[in-house]
Image (cartoon, rainbow, N blue to C red; front, side, top):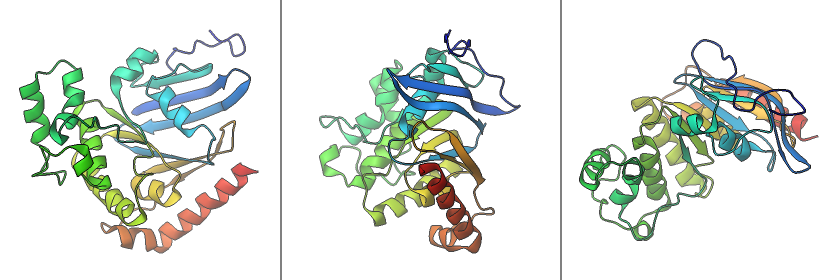
Length: 268
């Protein structure tokens, strides 16, 4: 129990019907530093929630709290109505900013690692992960080591590893931050297609407003630290199937301007 809030940190909030991720009155501190304060958010089942905000505002911390990698100082977080950190972790697959591929393993064995960690045998894990290589644009690179792959291909392997974990919620922490602009745009279009083919509830942290609006159904704009909710925006719909057409549409440009204005307000 938090002495300041009087709430149990592991207590599940009461989400609206269909909410897969629910955050209520969330506060998190590191010693005397307050990173997040009084935050309320929800992600409906099967939806993509984008999180944007100024650098250092606590976006990655929020994602780690949702995924059960940390316990909040106050308020409550629930994933599929489960509030304990271990229960959240069991339901979330976390993809960090860096691809974290093991250099001594092949692309196939890196992709199968999440299954191996769950106790699946090596052969079965390879078969299950390998069955997705063609769909992920990785066919022919099963035996390649990470150093032999391009940045975009490494991120595809990392996402494949996250997806085959079989968890209902994906927590993606700036998955394309390290890529050049052209590769990043290509990966955004690829990820949109991958999520359309295999829908999951996704919480996506990004420092790129355009990326968040393109990939997410709703985008939450956070303030500078301590992170508070400034505004939530719905992504333009219907979304054009072609990324370039989508991000240049009048509705998208208007939403991007509104999000940027909210970012400026939250940075003051």
